[in-house]
Image (cartoon, rainbow, N blue to C red; front, top):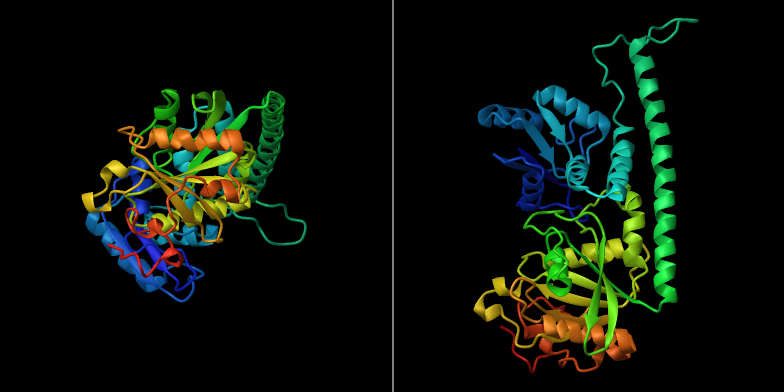
Length: 398
């Protein structure tokens, strides 16, 4: 069962809970019911309030649900109270994403990163989990009961494990830095694929490099960074192309921190290929979220090419008139936008052309306009998603 709460303006609330349903499906669950609520502030005990908690309990019994997943982060106390009240397992968005990452990580580095994030998440949720053990007794000179002892032992073990994982990840980061310095000395031009999860980054990566990496129509299909050489005939040189982990709304801070070594690949790239699902009804929100995460890892000012993927899924009236134009980001910075279909190969030649220009001349503000369609076309050059600031009264829109 899925639950989302609207806390008013400024809160991240998805009234459809479609993305949460996709996350649950990626974790192997099936959503049988969805419930939304509206509150001014989270209830300290039950997050949704006691009345809504009773309603959720009755729906859980009606559908015989095995668990409840909340679209927002729960405090340890709220999660514990809800589990006792509902009688089923309760998971929040952060815990669900951690489960998916734990199941999908394949490389040694990916497993270390996910384990670190999982332990940091678990360390705050140990209190009173040992209800079958005796509580601490009161009185002067009396030692704590077995329950308190077990909690302290677990906390100490987790802290030691976290310290060990951070040391091992530091070595991995050092190795990656050595590899990057080697590529820098060789004068290698580096491009990284970034974007919202399930935007088609891995499919595009395979289409351009013939790498054969795993790609599927699901959230977080790829967690491990893969780098391949890509020869650009127009530039008469090879560049490196890296496929990185996808971003998502409310990506847990612990995961962003744990994947610092992986995301550093994007932060030190010469150009970012920001892949967008052109068919998504919320693509503007997804673009904003990716830009926010890029800013948080120090990659917000890197040259970007917006790659609007999955154009083969658009309706006829939404198809682009041109495969290339100029797009204005919320910050006011303009960048090249390319429309492609990684599945059919449409527009990939244009993307290679843009990459060749970037490798030869860079993509500064002046270079971004070179050979691009007039910015006014961005309004009605497919799917009507460009900012209204680019609108021109002389150009009628769809």
